[in-house]
Image (cartoon, rainbow, N blue to C red):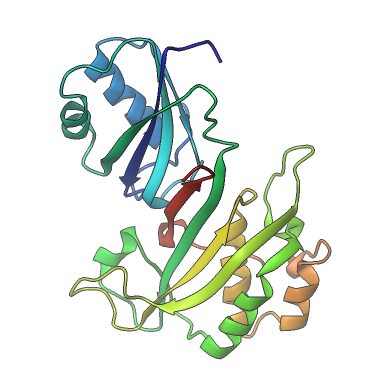
Length: 261
């Protein structure tokens, strides 16, 4: 990347339901595209670069995400206000801080936290669809908790990765995996019986969280055994071609922390 004079860490939140993920793609709206489009309007030029800390998938939301801004000019007066008010309504500017040239937004990440929000059984109000997944089958919560705990620690997550790039490291460590009754997303239309699964790790392979939740869905609806789930964390396992990628709208990136924080 070319040399720049100024470097900033910017934190944002976004509702991913109508967006096609973070990464720019032809002919669709993505978070990165809308960020750069807004900055171009605020700066009145395109003499800057941006790099995200995490590439979320289409329809995935974030209450705490971050990107780095590289720029040569000083930030314009009232930058924060201008940036906030010109972002689309489903992207929110949270904060900005200056960092030095040595800061690397990819390599400096120390922890990422994802939460997967879901409910099951009776169909919920459709207003929940943008940020919570619904499954018609009843889940066995006791079995679910046992399955979740299998993911904690260091494992081979090859079985929980789609389209891996050559040379990717499948051995990852999940510091914490827990089931919680939902007390984070609250509104009068949200089901009383709703839950979230929290995963904390330095990094995840592609689609890892949604595939883990997909496996837990099979386990909790009696279509996968604990023994085979445990086997999948040791060696590649095809789940008898049953494994699904869990609904994207339930997944939220809730924290990105950096090594110097």
